[in-house]
Length: 320
Ligand SMILES: *[C@@H]1O[C@H](CO)[C@@H](O)[C@H](O)[C@H]1NC(C)=O
Ligand SMILES: *[C@@H]1O[C@H](CO)[C@@H](O)[C@H](O)[C@H]1NC(C)=O
Image 1 (tube, helix red, strand yellow):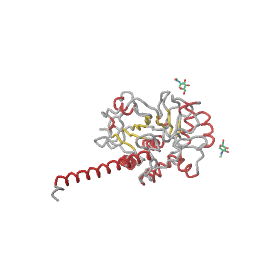
Image 2: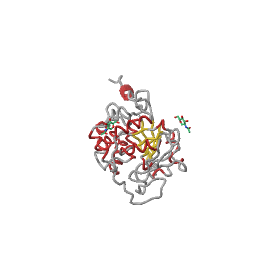
Image 3: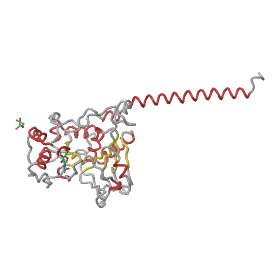
Image 4: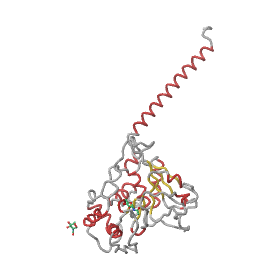
């Protein structure tokens, strides 16, 4: 017993502990590597939009098979989608949707876009909202480093480059918010009625539609080969699946975020929500207090975006 002294016992215990620790270390590492390889069969980014073992909150809402953009082939609407979509905004007369679609795709590209998701793709997207919280953020370079930069309505970059960046790959508009875009930008129409599709056709041809529920621009500058239209069924899906029917219909901001969830692998969100003083205002406009989000379920939308952030599906850059 005296030969096997306290010193040897300590050494042996230490050796055992070290072996155990090393085993655990390599084992854990092995499991992590294995999980990583497995999850990355979905895309080539570090995290992908839909992954093996996703949270039920996410899988109950996210429908990966839905087509976000309209093509002639997928343009037929079920009665439910058509009636819901037609009820969103007032129109003095209802045109023949099928006939309008025929005209639309004689003029604009008619191919399924962004169906290239897979293990080799890592597409990063910045969704740039119009919140005043982006002012002073210096996010400009970060935003411009994304593959896609999606902006909405009249949100300018000129004069705000340091905070909002200068690159715009996709400009989301509807007739009442239309702006000119440069030749490299995709004009993405969010149509809330058949008349909006007719306006798009008119804006590139006869330029005779000047009025919806308000005056609209008869024409805009944009590359005709890069025009896209959000699918009405996608809007209904966002309203029901993501927003649980809160609000009349989804805001442009939330629809744009949802679009990004479906065409990108990694989504980073900028300029969403109120500023540090609780004001909801646009970064390019003076502060108005008591700004309401109107008929959109603003708080529910923001909470849903926060949930996506909590569940590591998006990153939210909340600014100042
Ligand atoms: C709508 O237009 C389509 C295609 O042009 C046509 O086949 C159909 O008969 C029209 N429907 C009505 C109700 O006019
Ligand atoms: C815009 O891009 C299209 C190709 O998509 C090209 O045919 C056209 O000449 C370009 N126009 C300008 C003004 O650069």
